[in-house]
Image (cartoon, rainbow, N blue to C red; front, side, top):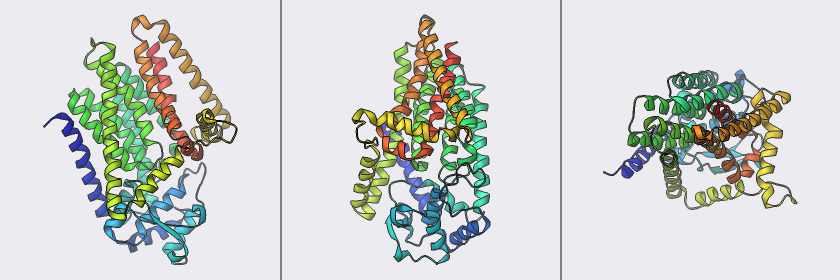
Length: 427
């Protein structure tokens, strides 16, 4: 069997496991899930407020948490719940937590609400939450998620100490930026963020670990396909994919440099691009298979909805007069001006300082790399820059989503961390 078929086989095989996991979780009795959800509201582990800014106890993004708990506790057939859990909502999707509480208490009738099957994602967070909830409370799940995410960041830093050269700089910077400026107190306990954050950090740590064990190129790419598929399974359009790729690209470049130190620069870039493509294969297969299953189950309207949301998120969010070229500057400006304090625990001055110092780190790194280019520092610094530009590419592709969702500022830990790494390497 050719290597290409093995890559595809890994992606397809994992998607079969995703489907089985969702089917098992969809079979969990809804009465138990509803009881746990109601208990969480009664005990304060869930709030009627959809958003709790800078809340380190139950988390910021209560809207998504309530949405997830509603999806798993709403009645329905196992197959339909696995592939397109029903969501009930009020006009303009307001008061999701209030809607969820009304449904679990019976004070809100489903027939008084609008509804649709939520098929755009695999909803891996649904499966894990539904399997954990019968054996622990929502508050306990939050504690587990918080501990797991922090431990995953520490694991990445620990593995990084033994990584060679540029890989060490990138991984240590990623772990440091993740621990300090990823808004972990507010998002790690979240059902829609915590699972995914854990997957990204553990995935990067795992790739570094197998790199140190001398894994072959073919084996490394098989793992990258798996990493892409699992990350997509957990993705709720919260920034997991761009963050993972931003760090993956320079790490793959530095792996190629350490495996074959005498290889020309183009070979390192070829290996880095091949690694990103392997990750992308896992992503693409996972998205396509989910939408194919949704189409077969619910009809073509769900795929039309998927493309409709894609068109909306890729549209120009800038006000009239900005023009087509104003899309990305507007999205970046809105994200940084409105949401950068998420990275600095609500402190506006600290956010401005962080952004300013990060920009200076990049300027200094690029200047030193150019000055010392004969010593071979330019390629490694450009590899870090390429990783940072992944975030810019994501914003360019999805400017409306970026502008409308403040939590997307969390993906800026990648250019921040990679700026530090580039500065270390350039020296």
